[in-house]
Amino acid sequence: MDDQGVAFTPVFSIGPVEVTNTVLVTWAIIAVLGVSCWLVSRRLQLTPPPLQTAVEGVVLMIENAVAAVAPQHTRQIMPFIGSLWIFLVVANLCGLIPGVHSPTRDLSATTALAILVFLSTHWFGIRIQGLRAYLRHYLTPSPILLPFHVIGEITRTIALAVRLFGNMMSLEMAALLILLVAGFLAPIPILMLHIVEALVQAYIFGMLALIYVAGSIQSHQLRSSPEE
Image 1 (cartoon, rainbow, N blue to C red):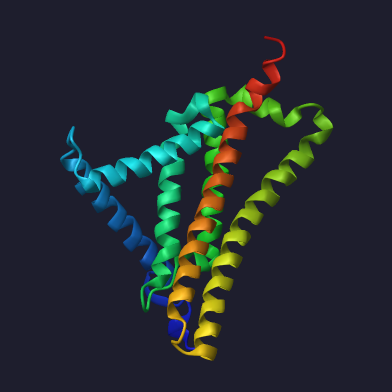
Image 2: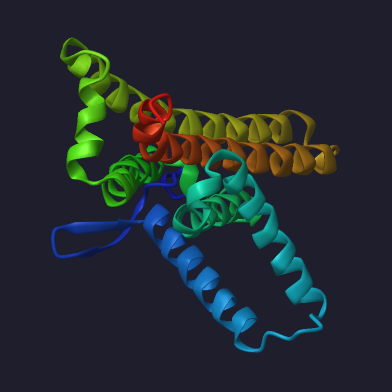
């Protein structure tokens, strides 16, 4: 395979740090999303135009999804989960652009996202519950289970990274193989398959992140509710 077709091909170096295609595409996505959010939010109107209506619909859909899992902490969680969902949708779909590889087909990118979810889980848990109350849930119902809690945290983070990477890599490889065998006789079904799978994988990753964060926040409440 040509090296230029690999998502983690080094493009240039900043000292000892190599900047790859994945990093460049990720930076581009962040820049595009940042500028888009700034432009959309500049002139909000009480009678929204079509673009504002579409954006408000997306925000409302994300808010309802977060509220269904963590109704008491929707306002705290939504900015992180919403940003993660939107980034994943764009990152997964950008592989449809000729010459551009989706960052999520690179294991380093999905690992970084999984680590971000891992750190955010503890951040929200400590911020809302307090450090002592949050750490106490690792000793519940028995201190003997502490190693299993730690192992569970690590394994689910690894699974989160590998699942997204494997699905996106296999999706692009399958599309490439079909194009090599069938030529361009069936581009539309392949395109639709890519879009649907990209959206599904973004939804699954974001929903798992939401469940992990909500679980860390609500663990103390679930223990204390029977006594109340």
